[in-house]
Length: 443
Image 1: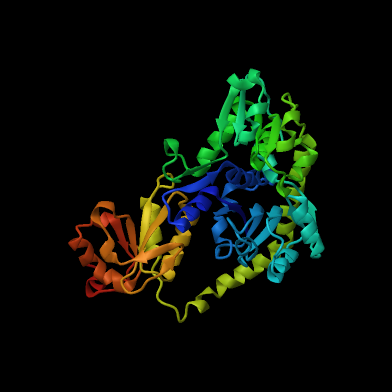
Image 2: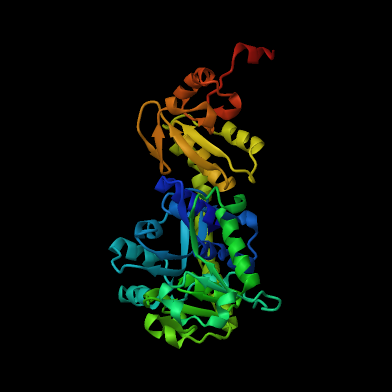
């Protein structure tokens, strides 16, 4: 049994594929609340090889090793619906550290799933009260992104005198003191871009880290309407002014820590806010998160270890009537020829058990590789949010690396690729190999 970590790059990649668009929304706050799990694992002294990265979009379909998975997320049908976050694979033990539910209409199935893994950490009081009314044990935790960068306070010494305006409402304009105008720098909490064409060829997580580093080194104050804009200030020890067009339930836990200025109070803003001492908050939040993860591990480790060992012993039974599997050579090829540091565009020709195993291996071991196409000669199929097209649409000039996973297709593919003048360096045939007379003679 291992520990899981929601991976921001995988999350953005899956959103990119699902939206079938050249651009997606990439949000610093989303990255921050995923990456902060590292602080919990550092405290628990979990080695990196005991951590498995998965995507938020594969919570229901994950079929790898059993994992304990901390979750801190806003549950909204506009982004991540109830089904994605509460219909979780039986191979995942979720630890809900700080969830916020946008609509109070969970099905009985979803409520039962939450009940199974109580207590539930809530990010706001509305979620807390709703779950308690449904008989679920829960507590108000706030957002654990507050732990980003650890529990230590950052020094403001040697910082540039820059005031970061992060998605500030236009109505604020007339209330800004003239003397601070030269120090203002404008930022947005998110960008709409291709995840593979961010400035400097950064990954989405690298881009987010670079933005957070800019805050840490150069911001003397943050003025923002963004939830995670305020959290960044708390995490990095930067004074914050929260400016809201309208108060929303998501800010309820922040109300006891920071003054919240709605549009009717903009004239009352204190433009010399003090840095909030978050030492106790961070220490307690980290202690609770560490205990929750450790308790879940202690509760489930033995029984799932036993189950996993027996499942492994009986794994061949499941395959007795299945197709012949010949994915091992493909995995060997990947390990020999691919680098984890490089972006690789790849495709599958044929969808079967071999395809699923190879895909699962790639997403867990080569995070920068991305599935860009699926080919099938006979049927119209959707695989991992990629819609299949006929192989005839393969173009020499833009061909990705292709795994031919169908036995029938592998017999046809070599001739097909020769006609298309596609080099054998651009594909791998997952095909069966048989002994021959030559093999037996040792020639």
